[in-house]
Length: 189
Ligand SMILES: [Cu+2]
Image (tube, rainbow, N blue to C red; front, side, top):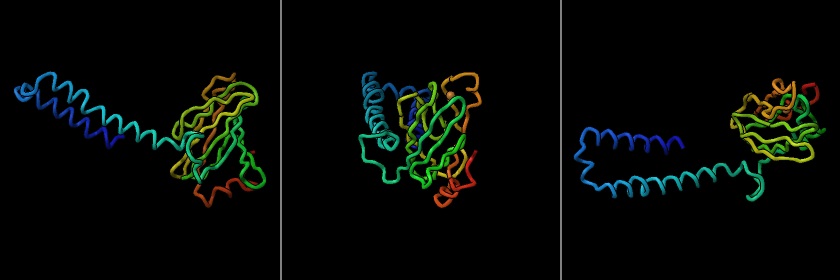
C-alpha cells in the first residue's frame, strides 16, 4: 500500500507545484479534461486494484468462504473477570496458560474467543483487530506474527473494576520452540 501510494502522492504534489510555477501548462487542458482524467480516470483503476489487493492479502484473516489455510493453528481464548485463559486443543496434553498466549511465528492462528461471564474483547493491536468475547457464543479471529517476539494484548470492552488490568501477552516462538514453551513446567500458573 505504501509503495503504491508514495509515487501517487509525489505525482499529485508534482503536478500541483508544476501548475503553481507554470500556470500556462494547466490551461492547455480544459477543466472538464482535468476532472475526467485526474478525478476519475486516474483514481478509479488504482483504487480498484488496491482494494482487490487488500482483500486478497487479508483473506487469510477471514473464516470460511475460502480454503482452509494449510498451516492453521487452533487456539481457544476465554475471557473471565479479569484474565484471559488460553487452551491449546491441538497440543498433546491439552495445555492451558493464563495471561500469556503462545503461538508459533509465521503461521496463521485461529483463535476461538469465548467468555465465561460478561462481554470482553480480545485485542492484540499489532497482530489483528478486536473481537468480542461473548458468553455462550464463540467468535473467531485469525492472526499471524511474521517474526518471533512479544506482542501486548488487552481486553478492550469495559468489564468491571478489573478491566484495566485485563491485559495479556502474545509470545510468538520460532517453530521449534513453540511446543517447548507449552511443555510441562513452562506454563504460566
Ligand atoms: Cu474484560
